[in-house]
Picture (cartoon, helix red, strand yellow):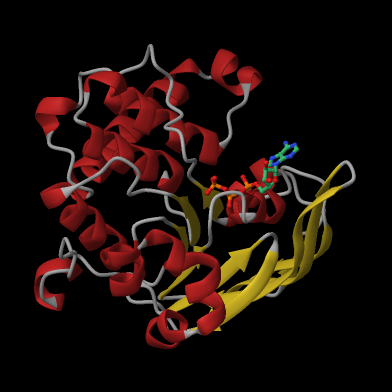
Length: 275
Ligand SMILES: Nc1ncnc2c1ncn2[C@@H]1O[C@H](COP(=O)(O)OP(=O)(O)OP(=O)(O)O)[C@@H](O)[C@H]1O
């Protein structure tokens, strides 16, 4: 088994921004999703706190990605979602992003014609919002903001482990592990508080996996709430505080990694199939 144990806390904490508390960041209550007559997700209920990683696992087609689509209001759903106590059932994906709830996707989704740095800058711009009128009437303000965005994006890429020598490349030319990190940078942008991370470990191995684990643990220690969908069980078991297991849209287990690992229903539905 590839070890993904993060380095010592001192090594991974870096410029730590401590969370104020372990406040409930995201609360999901009875969320269900139907695609036509097919029920993909039934009564999903969980919460994740600041400074916590919740793993969502399950076999292919279990409803994991649908849960992210539901939480970010990208698909029609029932049930209720609250973000730091605020009900966000009708919030657009962009409004959720402004409130600090963002997601990454299984497939890297970058602007292919932009450089790595420009992609990171674009995520800052999306989070800030932009006004054509303002940039037309006050171009010098826009130019100043662009420079500030460039500096912040550059610093963030370096902090997340993408060295400057890669910044002028196009995303497709990055090593695969760094492409997955870039997708987290792009979602994180100017600072998300709750990050839904969809299979960051897909296609990643060895040292890159260790770096990825360290990055996620560092975000958690900075106070961010993370929900992680992942098929790499060693990554999930090592970095998640709690794990929720889906099978055919239903929650079949939810608890500490050691407990979930031993749960007969999980072994039957999921882990058993991996051996
Ligand atoms: N847009 C859609 N229309 C119809 N059915 C869909 C749609 N999206 C997903 N499904 C179906 O819903 C079920 C759950 O899919 P989902 O992608 O959420 O599962 P998953 O657990 O993320 O799977 P994987 O691990 O393979 O990514 C699957 O049976 C899938 O085929």
